[in-house]
Amino acid sequence: MKEKRVVVALGRNAFGETFPEQQKNVKKAAEAVADLAEQKFQIVITHSNGPQVGMIQTAMTEFSRLDSRYTVAPMSLCGAMSQGYIGYDLQNAIRTELLNRGIFKPVSTVITQVRVDPFDKAFNHPTKVIGRVMTKEEAEAEEEKGNYVVPEGDGYRRIIASPRPVDIYEIDAVTALLDAGQLVIAAGGGGIPVLEQGTSLKGASAVIEKDYTAAKLADMVDASHLLILTAKEQMTIDNGSKAIGNIDVSEAIRLIDEGHFDPVTTLPKIDAGVSFVSSGKGRTAIITKLENAYQGIRERTGTIIK
Image (tube, rainbow, N blue to C red; front, top):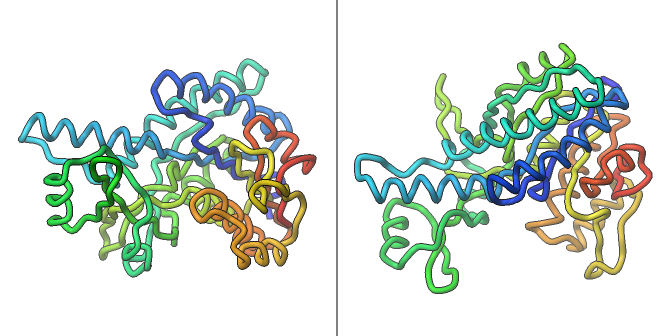
């Protein structure tokens, strides 16, 4: 195992929902990452893209309505766009912060494709709401194309699947960059979901939960730590009245089985941590707030799974 290799999963609070917010917030993320770089960790970063991919999908849909020559952009393409522009802001912020601290380390963003199983049951039970609010007529047109929609307010919104990640195609590139001493940003937004068809990869209409991809990425680069950075210092149970500190895998599984975690917000983080720790020896998963990244990696705060 490569000691001091960490995968850092940044939540949506590291970016905000607009271009100005993102440029401001990535500076805070860059400070947290630079704190880890100063401790000589090899670092791979993955990140959320929830608001961003929705914004891109909405913008491209509106564009297609304004100009009939253009079609609606598929979700896989929107995911690729979000990886590029989030990576652009993030890698530049990190590069600046590292240089300001006298650390000379290249930062690279890898556009990353993640294989999903076409028979994953998630495709029959979509959970991720995306895009703008549609009229009844627009929603019916989406359903005619085989897409799912759900009511929201006075209209409807599209809802898509969130399958589990099976493989990461660019993992060799990520590992090579790590071995070369670079800081790598990869699998943004859970990665671009693709289906393998012979020698071709076809984008899937889905959004992969980024915490599960972070665990898969951490396992495949043989990291010693998975650091999930969110808006809370620790995960909680009993309606937020009881914070979870240090727990082992068996205890985490018990809490999952007893239904203590919200399936949309907290469950993926705990479940991803269990998956990573269970996949190898001497591994640690930490879930804490962005500002506590350094204290979290030192196991002084956060929810820690071993």
